[in-house]
Image 1 (cartoon, rainbow, N blue to C red):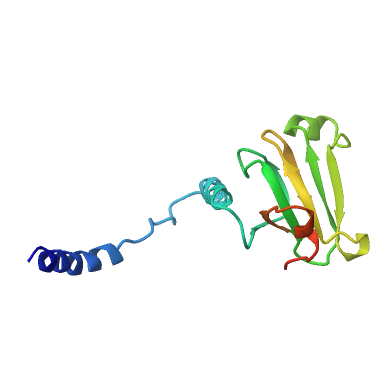
Image 2 (image 1 turned 90 degrees about the vertical axis):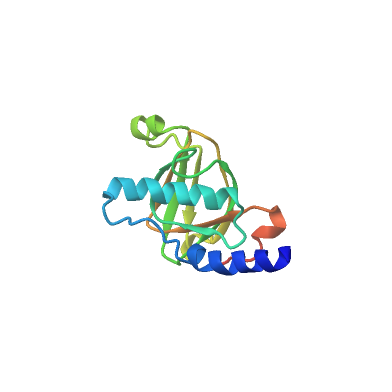
Length: 147
């Protein structure tokens, strides 16, 4: 008898659960939508990235816009570009050549996949290309580019 009532309860509640919708985002400003997208990206990073997540060209503060960590970075297109990692945003603004890491991207430079280490507070600048960041599993993981 208890099983029967549980079955009825599940059948009654199932349509209610399926009616749950995402909140309306149309009233959010550009900055609010951008902040929300960073939060979603961070949640995806925390859950692991077997297929990776696309990070478009732009400037990012590690720990705020994207999480710190050790990543496999795949170049998305053959277009040239560069990745620069600075100690902080202030270093990037005051001393543009003081980057910790600079990697040129694309076929013309021979860099299609690489290991990227980011620490909280670092400032990441991706120029002219997008990167697909995924979980880094060691040197053997770098042998085949993903697109």
